[in-house]
Every structure is written in C-alpha cells, then in structure tokens.
Image (cartoon, rainbow, N blue to C red; front, side, top):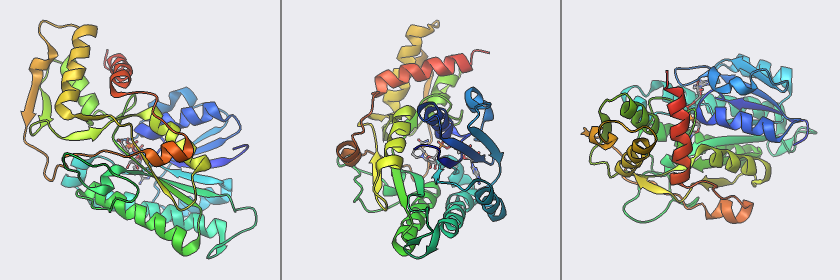
Length: 338
Ligand code: NAD
C-alpha cells in the first residue's frame, strides 16, 4: 500500500465519507484524490476531519466527464480506482431513472475505459509498471433481486434486478466484468447489503426514523413493515472493501453482509425503544409509527451469504445491528440537536 495514489469516486457520499478517513488513518503514505460531483447526496462537511490532510485532494466533477477523467489520470498517475460514485436511492430511481442510467452505467464505463487506456498496452498486456493497478467497483446485493422467506445470495446467484437503481448497478457490474474477461484488466467487485451508520443522507430509512421520531412527526413505514434487509454497519463495509481491495483475486466478486436480517418494523421499533431510553418523551416514540403505501416493486427480502469473504479473506463484521444502531442514533442525535 506504500505511496499509492488512489482515485476515489463519490467520496462525499455516505459510504465514501466513512471510507476515506478510515483509509487515510490506516495507511499514512496513501494519497487519495476524491472526485465527487456533489449532487444533493454529496456532503463535504462529512469529510471535515480530513479536509486539510496532506494526502487528501478534493476535486469537484462528474465521472461522466471524459476530459476531466483523462486530465486527472495525466496529473496523478493513479495506482487504483475505488469507485463509490452512484445515484443510490431506489425511490428516486422510480421517479426519475435518467440520472441512474447516466451515472451508474455510463459513468462506470467512462472510468473503466480511461483506466484501461492508461494501464493496458493491449488486451491482457499491462503497460510496464501497471501490473498491479486495480479497479475496485462498489456494488450492491440488490442486483440479485429478491428472496423469499429462506435462502441467501451467494456470488453464484443469478442477477435479477427489479428497480431502475438495481438494474443500473447490475449493468455496471457486467461492464466491469467484461473489462476483466475482454481486456484482462485487474478488477474486483464487492456486492454489499444495506449499510447504516453516521453520515447517511436524511432521505434513507434509518435517518428518517430517527429524525421524524425526535421531531414528533409520523414515522413512515412502507406496506406492512415486513420487508427484510441484511443490515451492515458502514465501518464493517469499509473494512471489507479494504480487504478485497488489497487481497481480493482479480476478476472475482465478493459479497459483504453482516448476517443481521431485520425487518423494517423491527428497525423502527428498536430505534424508538432506544430513543425512549436516551431521550424520553411524554409517550413512547413507537406511537408515531405509521404504515404508508408500499413502494412499487418493493423487494421482499435481501440476505447475504458472506462465507467467501469470511473464509478467503478473514473478514467478519465487528458490529451486530443492536450495537451498531446505538452508535448511529447517538451520531444523529448530535447532528439533529440544533
Ligand atoms: P450516496 O448516494 O450517499 O453517495 C453517492 C456519492 O456519489 C455522492 O457524494 C454524490 O455526490 C456522488 N455522485 C453521484 N453522481 C456522481 C457523478 N456523476 N460523478 C461524481 N460523483 C457523483 O451513496 P452511498 O450510500 O455512499 O453508496 C456508495 C456506493 O455504494 C454506491 O455505488 C452504492 O450503489 C453502493 N452501495 C450502497 C449501499 C448502501 O446501503 N448505502 C449498499 C451497497 C452498495
């Protein structure tokens, strides 16, 4: 890892802004260039702890802008790309899929293609010194579609994306795969389950539950609240990315998930219970939970079999939902206190 220069895309978003400080803290000779368009989901204040770090540079720009990516490659001679940038909110993809197609599919292609031209002489032949240059694609378990009551997603599960968001991520995964098979590029992909933790955008489920609860508003839960996700604390995801980035086998994909399946109603009740202890009101926050019309095409259940990353790379989640959610609530109470 010594003296590597890494292009991180989407570093001002939720996971990227947890990953960059973690990465700079662990590897003190790594240089990070964070390229982010600062869409509504990008928040530079999430990076204030490292904004003046000597090994950190922020560049505002779009991954779809080919000239900009070319220029960045000329200036920095990147050793790797860790690609987080995406449109990531399923509800927005239902309302307005256009940006998802552009950023998630075309943007990923653009980065890959520029990287290929800079790192590869021809198919399966690296330019001298570029042999270990790697493209790490950050993806989601939503590409696998939905599960019934039983079963788990493994790396062998067929893709069956159901929303414009997951379809755009699935497409990007395939483009990454093709650059390995066609050009022999050094790529890895991680498909992770739902993350939660500090710095997540207000629009997402857990920040919404906390914010609405303490503001005395109704806490909206889709349908009957029985949809299940496999929740992973964001720093456990960051640790998994780090392991795969460093030790994952080129061309392989790795599922990351915390074996913490919880349904949405459980999540809302648990957060309300904890808030009742930490910040008691006149009545339990649970009274504010309200069921609202379900999201169209709402996948019933996602759950990850993380055996591959656990056994091959020695990863394991440090937090379970009950420990991670306490830290998360405290972070948001601090954020929302004004
Ligand atoms: P996010 O929406 O919080 O952040 C996305 C970031 O990308 C933002 O800072 C945004 O400004 C930036 N961005 C968007 N379009 C861009 C463009 N065209 N050019 C440059 N920057 C752009 O997303 P997140 O939750 O941090 O997710 C990061 C990655 O992880 C995504 O690829 C997502 O698919 C994947 N993922 C997320 C989760 C989750 O639970 N959040 C789970 C699995 C995988």
